[in-house]
Length: 326
Image (tube, rainbow, N blue to C red; front, side, top):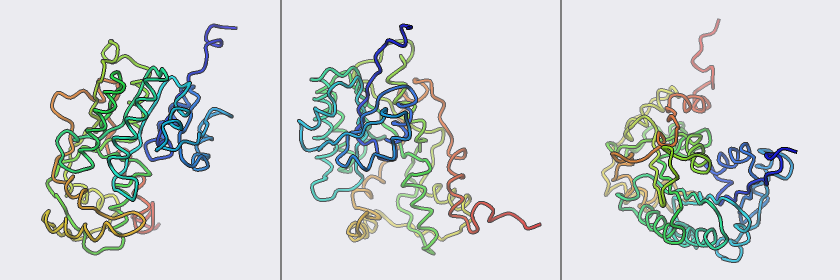
């Protein structure tokens, strides 16, 4: 038996593993040979992820996020911990502070006490500049994590795109039914990043030594794609990819905030909240001289390589909607 065969299999615990980003991280962890524990309040919701690995490799674990003992049990025995839990709007007890700060601190404390080797915490691009409650609690969460686990790595991705995203899909969906689309913060700059690249960044942090050195304590990586676009550009590209054409109605921030006060009441998922309007007042782009994907050996994927493929379903007639008949 070789030394490699005798080496114990590494264990990873991921919080938020059933989400959009989380499922890509689970897939890559499984491919790298990890046993993956998915900490979730509803284990059945993670069963679909078991096909990402071999029998017994993907293990949904019941975890109550408000219970430190439950978090400890999910973390215990794991070599690496990944936290990608986050919310875009508040509902009842799921407040920004509860999820972004208190839960993040609980996970980091458990990782430190129980001897995890690595902790990767997913934050968001621009949280050190934005004024929204979302951004402020994300930044406070980063600080809480680093206080509890100083060697944690913080990843700040921009708007994440991919086949299941809630960004391009949402706007393309609205364009199918609304003759006029609201344009809020038309000049606000965004730097969207591919979900697969963010998952690769997580794996690079766990397995690589950036720049040939050990990962520095408390290192922050800002993850953005190769293009900086505005909200107006977002609509323009969607129209080009889907063959749709809609009028845009620019909304000043005060009016958008007023409208959002009503739209946030729509269940189960609000179309827009006042806090999201506040977020749109600040650019979400990689800072000058920031450490990013390149430092992890990752070449950023352009939107044009990925997004048109899943925008086809919004085109009249589907994939072949613009094809000429023979």
